[in-house]
Figure 1 (spheres, rainbow, N blue to C red):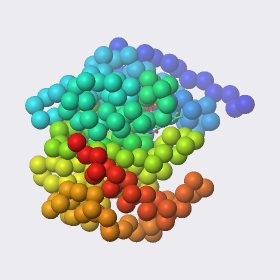
Figure 2: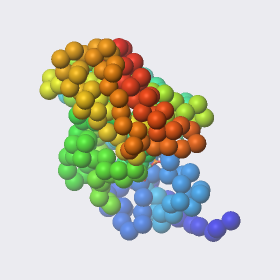
Figure 3: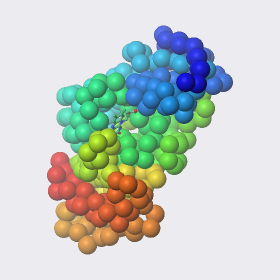
Figure 4: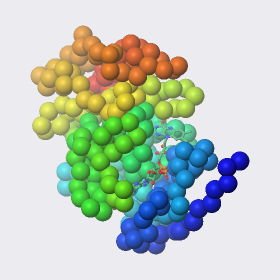
Length: 264
Ligand SMILES: Cc1cc2nc3c(=O)[nH]c(=O)nc-3n(C[C@H](O)[C@H](O)[C@H](O)COP(=O)(O)OP(=O)(O)OC[C@H]3O[C@@H](n4cnc5c(N)ncnc54)[C@H](O)[C@@H]3O)c2cc1C
């Protein structure tokens, strides 16, 4: 056992969390990733700044053509929200597929995107919907936010406040789960927006990515048939004990067609 101690502080406001977030301190949201990482000594923050009870970060609201969700909102809250279902039903379906009930009741939108696990679901939704991340310092377009495996554009002491999702004409998410972890072996989020279709993939590569060939095909014909023959190069995809890169490339095509077929 490696001895390790840390300070625990429960922030009463975003401003207080920001002032406490210094040096090796880390924010604690749902703890679904951070606590395991600490247990394994993969992370050893000096201070945990608990933001899980901040009402300022926990909300879901429709603002004109956008759905705005606070960073502290749990996956369960998204999965059971009538506001989400009315605006972007695909987002509700996606949240329902995350982990298991315990993970969904604790895990948060902000924690998920700040962590940017390559097999996490939210990055696909943010990129496919052209979302914007609002932080304590600025606004970041989703495509600029996810910079690589477990890395984001967030500065050391930057806090995610909310994500603004433009409401699409249609959207859907299809996920092929790893049966053990429930994370995505491959997941594809598709949307039909005013500026054209978008296809975002997670689980297959080291970071979320778009598929321009599919987007072009869907621009003239938003049907599963339109993307049937489009193949993905396995060269850049992940290969591990769960699935080969070739299998993941195949899954991208299958999941994309399923998503387009069910888009509403
Ligand atoms: C068994 C299991 C199965 C899972 N299955 C899935 C799945 O199928 N799909 C999926 O997408 N995810 C899955 N997850 C991940 C889970 O859904 C959580 O979203 C994820 O663990 C992080 O969210 P959290 O709120 O628990 O963050 P925490 O663990 O508390 O924090 C994670 C990181 O984000 C930082 N952070 C938290 N909030 C903010 C903020 N507002 N601003 C800036 N930084 C912040 C923390 O400092 C930390 O570095 C699974 C997790 C487990 C344990």
